[in-house]
Structure formats: C-alpha cells, structure tokens
Length: 184
Image 1 (tube, helix red, strand yellow):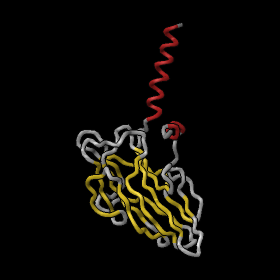
Image 2: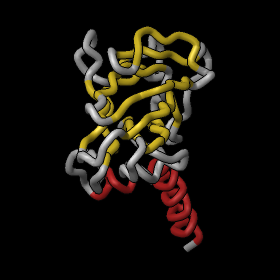
Image 3: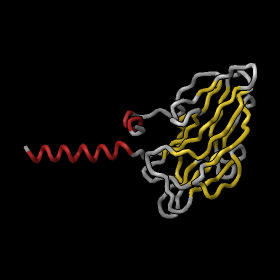
Image 4: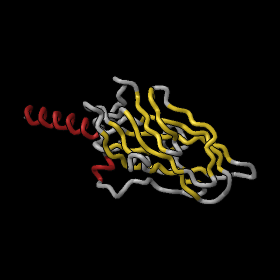
C-alpha cells in the first residue's frame, strides 16, 4: 500500500512538472501587463491612446531571441517603442522586421511570459481592424531562438492578435485539451 501511494505521489509530481512547461512557444499582443486583454476600442472624438505589449511564452527550451514583424492596420499609429532592457542586440524595427537577442546567459525561463517590447499607440477611428505578428521578411517566418547549444530557431504559435473595435478570440490553431492545459 505504501509503495502504491509513493508511486502515485511520484507520478503526480512528474505530471505537475510536465503540466507547467509548454513544449511549444507562443507570442501574443496584449493591452495590459497581465497579458489578459487583447482588445481596444475607439472612444473618440480624439484618438484613443493605448499600449500594446508583445509577450512571448517560451517552450521547455527557453527563449534567447526573437524574429518577427508587426503588421499595423491603417487606423493604428505606433508613436513610441520601448524595448526590454535585457535585449542587448536588436536589428531592424517592429514594422519592417526585427531580430532581437537577450544577453548571453540571460535565457528567458520556460513557461513564463516575457515582454520583448511595448508600443505606445493611437487608435484613430472606430473601424474594426487587427494588429498582428507576421513573418520577418528576411527569415520568412516569426520564430524564437531557444536556449539550447547554438540557439537554434523554433516555430512559434500565435496566442493572440490585438483587435480594435471588435471582440476577438485567441489566435491559436485548434488544440487538443492537453495542449490547452499546458498553457497554465
């Protein structure tokens, strides 16, 4: 009986560790630092100010760098970009395509959301639109560089786009229940 209880406890601990660490990396655009809101609405008649946060959820292999582009609709104007102070090299811009890398030995932990940038924006009208993470034009995709030897790139799934003047759901592809649980 004791062996069964100990074995059950061991399995729960192993399952708990696996449950907390996603095997896939995600990116999301949010309007709050708690990464829970991804919608903003025009309240006119003057432009609506908001901050867009770009958050990454590293896989079990961690995160050392990112490569992506932000596609802005015509009714969203980015006025200022603030970069995570841990990023030591950034080539390009968000709107043209950016490659950004954290300092050596500064691997971003698996399963913990990390902000790479926040952007001060103006929403100029009440037209429904969407700000999106899209492929870096030189790389042909959006991706992270993980923390394994040589910092190999790995694909990223979109968690959210940022929707203006409309409600929108998460942007991920259809998932299994296990994949959804692994986010939490």
